[in-house]
Figure 1 (cartoon, one colour):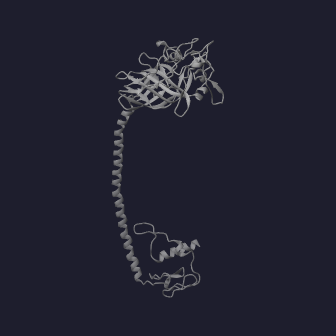
Figure 2 (figure 1 turned 180 degrees about the horizontal axis):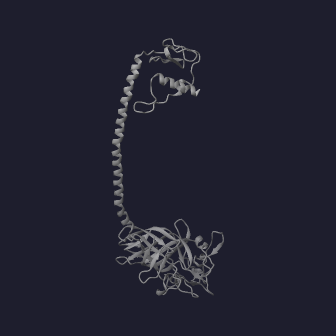
Figure 3 (figure 1 turned 90 degrees about the vertical axis):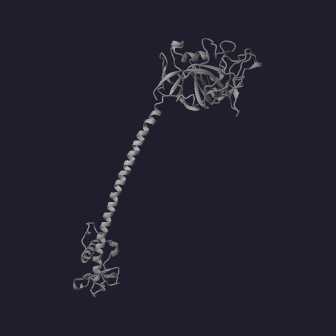
Length: 425
């Protein structure tokens, strides 16, 4: 059936005297076979013009050909065209067809004109490309400004002195109860251990020189209201003549926060009720917690894990504050690290087995909480530390309570730091 359709199309094209291409060489549109409805009438239908009989089963009159489409006769007879048994078109129809040819030809200039429009558009595209190139140049031109901002180096300050003030760490050596926060018992105190880890040997420290806490300002801008601050808890530092050289540790452990600076006034003042005192005389712990005045900074509250003598203490609501020293700034002085440790978190912290007197115990066992007990995460009951005052009626209690009712301990550590040479990312 498909081959018969192609024959009919060819016959129709030949009868109309139309070549396979337009004057401009464009292919003619294909004749939709659906127009033929997939059938040629085989019932001997008679064409309406000249009484010619349909080709299928009939005869053509004077060489004319009749094609019946959907019940309508299409008779091509020297140019006469009759479609659907309707309107005969006389030989003048050929003239109409011929007249239509110039219209097609006339359309070609329109296409050519359109091509000209496209060609005319090409310069616009070229102009757009030039604009893009110009934009790229503008971007390149802007690059130095961005690079100029990117090369502003961060400034680091390594903590060179760190002392726990409150709460106190207590032990039972052989008899009684002793405070080993500041004064050593059996060769051990918390703050002496911190000094050994922080200070290099040339400054009286130990061979370990292992605790490197660096406050890294991004950038250092004491005159700005805020600036970025990374607290590197395990920086890699080497003792240099002046200053020490530091960089991020192989597996960096740092806290990202914001330093809020002010030129005058107070950045931090300890709440007396949170800094506990001991029974007896003198009542204040020594040293006392620092107060920080301008020019100074204080960080936003956050989470911070501090390491004391190998003891990792996870603090919440933590802040760091210190005064800027020198112009340009060469150090941080009268600094404070503060944060809250809940009783349960204190019960979960296990002291390193290598520590004398306290190794392997829970931290809560060596903090004074008025003789109370608490439970750790595993549900085990843990008793608080001994009473340095000795008398059961005068229990010392370093514990504090947050507004939401959580019991725990506010930690206060005094520090100072020196400017270091920072390298790396």
